[in-house]
Image 1 (cartoon, one colour):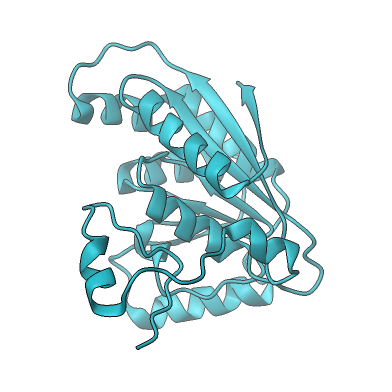
Image 2 (cartoon, one colour):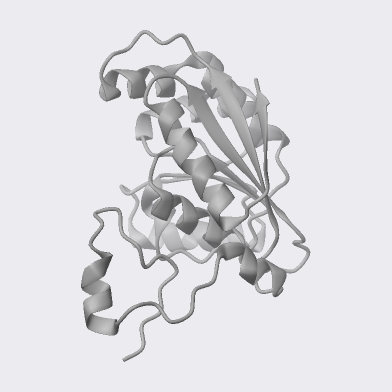
Length: 220
C-alpha cells in the first residue's frame, strides 16, 4: 500500500488511523523542500498586526469585533489595492467579506466574489477568468480551501486569521503552484490584535517556523 498526503496529520489527533492502515511515514518533505527543488514558487509571508481595543469575552464576541472593525477592514482593503496582482483574498466569514467589498467598491476597484452560495457553473467561470487574468482581484470564502487549481496567484491575503495549521498549509501550498511570469508569492497574514486571535497567530508563526517559511512582521 502507498499513501500520499500533503497534510497527513489531523486536527483531531487521529492520524494513527491512517498509520494503522498504511504504516508509519517513510519519507517526509517540508513545503520549503519543494521550493528548493524548483517545484513550488518561493513564498514570503508578511504578518500584518492590527491592534484592536479588547472589549470582548467570548470567542464569538471577539470574532464579531475583529471582522466588523472599520479600521481593520480598511487596512485589508488597502493591502488588496496595493498587492501585486492577481490577488486572492480568503475570508472565514461572509460578513467580513461583505464589509471589505463595500470599501473596495467605494475605491472603484474591480473585483469578483465567490462564496458557497454560488453554483458550480459560476465558480468554474470565475476561476477560469481569474486564471486567464481577466479578473485581477478575487474575494472568496473558504470554499477555496480544497480542490481548486489557481496557479497564477501572485498575492494571497489571509484576511481572517485562524488557528488550524493544516488549513493554513493547504492555503499557502495552493498559492505556490508554478506559473509563467511568477517568481514569488507574497502572503499577507492579517493578525487582529485581540483576545483568542493573538494565540491563533502564535499557532501560525509556529507553522512558518516548522516549515522554514520566511516571514516578516509589521504593525499597522
